[in-house]
Image 1: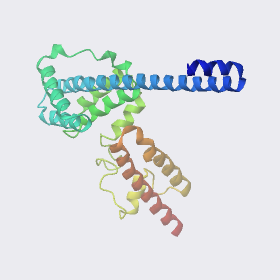
Image 2: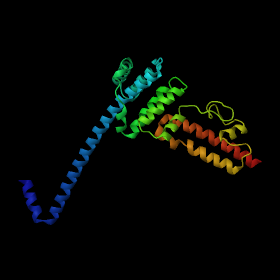
Image 3: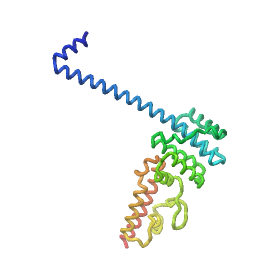
Length: 256
């Protein structure tokens, strides 16, 4: 009766009619937002379940391709699921991978993985790089497999190369040593600073600044956030070494 009376009054009084309309609109908007939020949560939950399944399948494919002792990799995968999910999921994942390895024909087709969002496909590629790097160094055979998976997941080649940089040591062009940035410290000699920026000792200030800008842009930590916390830390280390080398060269040129 109260509602009917209120509706009757609102028809007669324009101000109350406007207030009633606004209240109804607010109520409907809240319902729509709650509904869409619920749908989004369900969608994310479904994608996460799909991702868990895909990681197991791709992990099994990788170990089958390696065709060698895979105990260390299995232990890593178990710990990965333990860290990101729970103990039950970790145990199930390990059992499923062993099952897939022993029953190769049972491995599901992974072509439909491209249907899941790009960021989740990137997670799969990162996961496989982590598994591959358990027994360092990553071999050419493993890189070939990872590159083929990259194509299957429809991930840009440039992204693949940037991810690879964080897992595969690059050779120093001048003396063929591993990892151009490995074991560097603030007290290294001036000629090593030039090698860090990959320029000649006869370079002028303009050339030094140009080389620094290129490397600083490439290894700036903000450029690596998409690749995860580990990649950011590595980029921070490299960026620091580049900056130290640049300062050492500029100071020497100023003094000269």
